[in-house]
Length: 191
Image 1 (cartoon, rainbow, N blue to C red):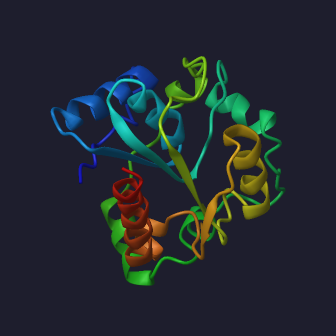
Image 2: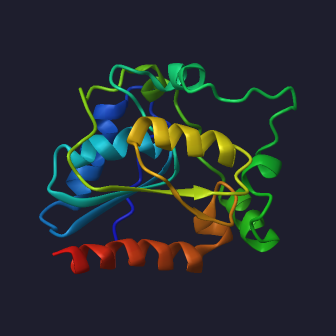
Protein backbone atom coordinates (compact mmCIF):
# COMPACT_ATOMS: atom_id res chain seq x y z
CA UNK A 1 0.00 0.00 0.00
CA UNK A 2 1.20 3.50 -0.88
CA UNK A 3 -0.34 6.58 0.72
CA UNK A 4 1.36 9.62 -0.83
CA UNK A 5 1.26 12.91 1.03
CA UNK A 6 -0.35 15.44 -1.31
CA UNK A 7 0.82 19.07 -1.22
CA UNK A 8 -2.63 20.19 -0.09
CA UNK A 9 -1.31 23.24 1.81
CA UNK A 10 0.66 24.53 -1.21
CA UNK A 11 -1.29 27.21 -3.08
CA UNK A 12 0.86 26.64 -6.17
CA UNK A 13 -0.20 22.97 -6.37
CA UNK A 14 -3.35 21.94 -8.20
CA UNK A 15 -4.82 18.78 -9.68
CA UNK A 16 -1.86 18.21 -12.03
CA UNK A 17 0.64 18.43 -9.17
CA UNK A 18 -1.50 16.16 -6.97
CA UNK A 19 -1.67 13.62 -9.81
CA UNK A 20 2.09 13.88 -10.42
CA UNK A 21 2.79 13.10 -6.73
CA UNK A 22 0.62 9.97 -6.85
CA UNK A 23 1.99 8.76 -10.20
CA UNK A 24 5.56 9.24 -8.94
CA UNK A 25 4.74 7.27 -5.76
CA UNK A 26 3.32 4.40 -7.84
CA UNK A 27 6.55 4.21 -9.80
CA UNK A 28 6.96 0.80 -11.41
CA UNK A 29 4.33 -1.00 -9.32
CA UNK A 30 1.83 -3.13 -11.22
CA UNK A 31 -1.59 -4.56 -10.32
CA UNK A 32 -2.62 -1.06 -9.23
CA UNK A 33 -5.81 -0.38 -7.32
CA UNK A 34 -6.37 3.35 -6.79
CA UNK A 35 -8.37 4.28 -3.69
CA UNK A 36 -9.54 7.83 -3.02
CA UNK A 37 -11.59 9.47 -0.32
CA UNK A 38 -13.50 12.77 -0.32
CA UNK A 39 -11.73 15.44 -2.44
CA UNK A 40 -9.43 12.67 -3.68
CA UNK A 41 -12.25 11.82 -6.10
CA UNK A 42 -10.98 14.67 -8.28
CA UNK A 43 -7.41 13.32 -8.39
CA UNK A 44 -7.89 9.52 -8.54
CA UNK A 45 -9.44 9.38 -12.04
CA UNK A 46 -6.58 11.56 -13.31
CA UNK A 47 -4.15 9.01 -11.88
CA UNK A 48 -6.08 6.19 -13.57
CA UNK A 49 -5.79 8.03 -16.90
CA UNK A 50 -1.98 7.96 -16.56
CA UNK A 51 -1.19 4.54 -15.05
CA UNK A 52 -2.48 1.05 -15.87
CA UNK A 53 -4.89 0.84 -12.93
CA UNK A 54 -6.98 -2.29 -12.63
CA UNK A 55 -9.58 -0.77 -10.32
CA UNK A 56 -10.65 2.61 -8.92
CA UNK A 57 -12.36 2.65 -5.53
CA UNK A 58 -13.99 5.83 -4.29
CA UNK A 59 -14.77 6.06 -0.57
CA UNK A 60 -17.20 8.86 0.38
CA UNK A 61 -15.71 10.79 -2.52
CA UNK A 62 -16.59 13.63 -4.84
CA UNK A 63 -17.30 12.56 -8.42
CA UNK A 64 -16.32 15.26 -10.91
CA UNK A 65 -17.77 15.95 -14.33
CA UNK A 66 -15.72 17.24 -17.29
CA UNK A 67 -14.72 20.91 -16.92
CA UNK A 68 -16.32 21.07 -13.47
CA UNK A 69 -14.42 22.78 -10.68
CA UNK A 70 -14.54 21.52 -7.13
CA UNK A 71 -16.21 24.77 -6.13
CA UNK A 72 -18.94 24.31 -8.79
CA UNK A 73 -19.46 20.67 -7.77
CA UNK A 74 -21.53 21.66 -4.72
CA UNK A 75 -24.12 23.56 -6.78
CA UNK A 76 -24.00 21.23 -9.79
CA UNK A 77 -24.76 18.16 -7.67
CA UNK A 78 -27.46 19.85 -5.61
CA UNK A 79 -25.48 19.46 -2.38
CA UNK A 80 -27.89 19.96 0.53
CA UNK A 81 -27.20 23.25 2.28
CA UNK A 82 -27.29 23.55 6.03
CA UNK A 83 -27.73 26.54 8.30
CA UNK A 84 -25.85 24.78 11.08
CA UNK A 85 -22.36 26.04 11.86
CA UNK A 86 -19.64 23.77 10.50
CA UNK A 87 -18.02 21.85 13.36
CA UNK A 88 -15.15 19.62 12.20
CA UNK A 89 -15.47 17.19 15.11
CA UNK A 90 -19.25 16.88 14.74
CA UNK A 91 -19.18 16.53 10.95
CA UNK A 92 -16.06 14.39 10.42
CA UNK A 93 -15.20 12.73 13.75
CA UNK A 94 -18.60 11.95 15.31
CA UNK A 95 -18.04 8.18 15.06
CA UNK A 96 -14.24 8.11 15.42
CA UNK A 97 -13.03 6.71 18.77
CA UNK A 98 -12.07 9.53 21.18
CA UNK A 99 -8.43 8.43 21.44
CA UNK A 100 -8.06 8.39 17.65
CA UNK A 101 -9.74 11.80 17.39
CA UNK A 102 -7.42 13.19 20.07
CA UNK A 103 -4.37 11.84 18.22
CA UNK A 104 -5.57 13.30 14.92
CA UNK A 105 -6.00 16.72 16.49
CA UNK A 106 -2.68 16.43 18.31
CA UNK A 107 -0.92 15.86 15.00
CA UNK A 108 -2.78 18.71 13.40
CA UNK A 109 -3.74 18.91 9.78
CA UNK A 110 -2.58 20.81 6.78
CA UNK A 111 -4.88 23.55 5.58
CA UNK A 112 -6.45 22.54 2.27
CA UNK A 113 -5.55 25.08 -0.41
CA UNK A 114 -8.42 26.20 -2.60
CA UNK A 115 -6.24 25.92 -5.74
CA UNK A 116 -7.49 22.45 -6.85
CA UNK A 117 -11.07 23.50 -6.11
CA UNK A 118 -10.78 26.33 -8.64
CA UNK A 119 -9.41 24.21 -11.49
CA UNK A 120 -11.69 22.61 -14.10
CA UNK A 121 -11.50 18.82 -14.04
CA UNK A 122 -9.54 18.12 -17.27
CA UNK A 123 -10.77 14.72 -18.46
CA UNK A 124 -13.38 14.58 -21.24
CA UNK A 125 -14.85 11.38 -19.73
CA UNK A 126 -14.39 9.00 -16.84
CA UNK A 127 -11.30 6.80 -17.33
CA UNK A 128 -11.88 3.34 -18.75
CA UNK A 129 -11.23 1.49 -15.50
CA UNK A 130 -13.69 -0.51 -13.38
CA UNK A 131 -14.97 1.76 -10.61
CA UNK A 132 -16.51 0.94 -7.24
CA UNK A 133 -18.03 3.42 -4.80
CA UNK A 134 -18.26 2.83 -1.06
CA UNK A 135 -20.88 5.04 0.54
CA UNK A 136 -20.81 5.74 4.27
CA UNK A 137 -24.36 5.69 5.65
CA UNK A 138 -23.64 7.92 8.68
CA UNK A 139 -21.62 10.47 6.70
CA UNK A 140 -22.65 13.92 7.91
CA UNK A 141 -20.62 15.67 5.22
CA UNK A 142 -21.92 13.73 2.19
CA UNK A 143 -25.37 12.48 3.30
CA UNK A 144 -26.27 8.99 2.11
CA UNK A 145 -29.38 9.87 0.06
CA UNK A 146 -27.49 12.67 -1.69
CA UNK A 147 -24.51 10.44 -2.53
CA UNK A 148 -26.68 7.54 -3.74
CA UNK A 149 -28.19 9.91 -6.30
CA UNK A 150 -24.84 11.45 -7.32
CA UNK A 151 -23.20 8.03 -7.76
CA UNK A 152 -26.12 6.80 -9.86
CA UNK A 153 -26.23 9.95 -12.01
CA UNK A 154 -22.49 10.41 -12.50
CA UNK A 155 -21.17 6.84 -12.57
CA UNK A 156 -24.28 4.86 -13.47
CA UNK A 157 -23.64 2.37 -10.65
CA UNK A 158 -25.17 1.51 -7.31
CA UNK A 159 -22.78 2.21 -4.46
CA UNK A 160 -21.86 -0.34 -1.85
CA UNK A 161 -22.60 0.88 1.66
CA UNK A 162 -21.13 0.58 5.13
CA UNK A 163 -22.01 1.92 8.56
CA UNK A 164 -19.55 4.74 9.04
CA UNK A 165 -19.18 8.48 9.01
CA UNK A 166 -17.00 10.38 6.54
CA UNK A 167 -13.72 8.95 7.86
CA UNK A 168 -14.04 5.14 7.77
CA UNK A 169 -10.25 4.70 7.83
CA UNK A 170 -10.35 6.14 11.35
CA UNK A 171 -13.74 4.94 12.58
CA UNK A 172 -14.03 1.49 10.95
CA UNK A 173 -10.52 0.61 9.70
CA UNK A 174 -10.93 -3.16 9.87
CA UNK A 175 -14.21 -3.16 7.94
CA UNK A 176 -12.83 -0.70 5.40
CA UNK A 177 -9.77 -2.88 4.74
CA UNK A 178 -12.00 -5.95 4.41
CA UNK A 179 -14.16 -4.13 1.86
CA UNK A 180 -11.15 -2.95 -0.14
CA UNK A 181 -9.67 -6.44 -0.12
CA UNK A 182 -12.99 -7.90 -1.29
CA UNK A 183 -13.02 -5.51 -4.24
CA UNK A 184 -9.40 -6.37 -5.07
CA UNK A 185 -10.06 -10.11 -4.83
CA UNK A 186 -13.01 -9.61 -7.17
CA UNK A 187 -10.47 -8.63 -9.82
CA UNK A 188 -8.73 -12.00 -9.41
CA UNK A 189 -12.02 -13.86 -9.89
CA UNK A 190 -12.90 -11.79 -12.96
CA UNK A 191 -9.61 -12.68 -14.68
